[in-house]
Image (cartoon, rainbow over the protein chains, first blue to last red):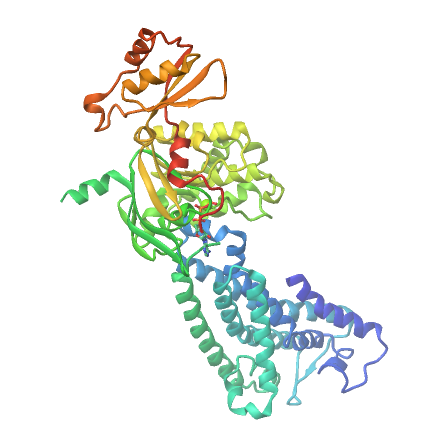
Length: 249
Length: 330
Ligand SMILES: Nc1ncnc2c1ncn2[C@@H]1O[C@H](COP(=O)(O)OP(=O)(O)OP(=O)(O)O)[C@@H](O)[C@H]1O
Ligand SMILES: [Mg+2]
């Protein structure tokens, strides 16, 4: 799965390299800047992965946590070991969390690396007009990856809950991915303005503040609070469901 | 009180235990008493609720009504204290197909917070040896045959020294050697003082290894006790082989028996009659010893060509308790 994620920026970089020129303003944001500065492959890779690819992989990982063990039948043997239901749930969620952190990082760093290999690397012009050195630009990349990791926490908690509802991992995965798409669709409907700040996908693309000088943290903080809320609610749901569940798989 | 002292002698005790799945009662108000140190056969046709009872025993499923305690402690409340002392095989083995046999056992052992990491490799090795899997230990479980997985499942139950082993159909899918090996294993575990609770529908097997048994039928417990008492309550049968069926029949009636003639062979008839239980209440006064029957027959000039008193088999008893029907009850 991480290999698939790493393939995204590689694909972008190779495609841009092989095509003659990208007309400015077409395609994903920053795509036209790649030829001038390879580091932009990392940003572009993360940007194109946010709506579907990252939620998909997080859905697969989080949906598989409990339901995957149930599907294999190994859940009953872990529980009679006895692993302890709460501990098992925590360990499984920790695994999903690690994936949320690693996934965007893999895209960012692979992107920066392949970008540096195929294109020139220089000072980066921020959205505020300031320029920063390549080393600091890499730090910004990591910062964006961290922002995205936080963005995915809520979804991973939803996936964990879904995973406690079924013995069929594919069902939990699909439900989680579908919810992430639904949330983004609702976020795009102006009629539901009141709902938007409560949608877990609301701040997913809101990391532009991190590309300014000085860095703005407002969006980061709002996002973190929202995601923490989702983790608390769906974590509690997953807990109450799992500790009382009859393991019949 | 006496309740406490009897509970200490029981490895498993269920009281009024029920499990409901929607409208269906999969386990219906059973009272199960498994003495410590026994090899306990848990019998019953398919779908009679054996696995469901085992799931409640291990804290995997909650009882709808009633209580169940294991090793003197109530489940599932004291699960963390009880389960490290229990080895289990529930509803067939289950493993990570992409890991080797050894790696799977390591993983399950690591899930037990009480297991000692330092001795893990040696214990895994020993468990694999006991089930004869040493040579296939490095193979991915995906490439295991049904019987190999079953053996690995048993090995998993044996990872640590256990006071109680709960084995749900342990010989499922095993070859004759494997089946024999499991019988030896169960005997040696019992010899070491462990209680072994085996669910099965292979009666011959239960007859060979168990000291006690219980019979489930459509969610209810229809009999339990020592194997001898279960067999005995099936009664004994007299079988007589003679060409003088008519005379013999008259003699048997005179002795207070009700013979049935099997008219298959024209020259030598087979007579069967059920004998009263020597230990039963009726037996006290009018019981006829088999040797007296033979004497009476010979006196009457009956040519006795064969005579046998057969103990009712567990199978007869099982069928009598759970019905002849082949269809699943519920
Ligand atoms: N998850 C479930 N949901 C609904 N009903 C179930 C479930 N699991 C078992 N049952 C029902 O409970 C009853 C008892 O099933 P159980 O698995 O305990 O039988 P068993 O005695 O172990 O049978 P077998 O010898 O085939 O293993 C069956 O009628 C079955 O249909
Ligand atoms: Mg069963």
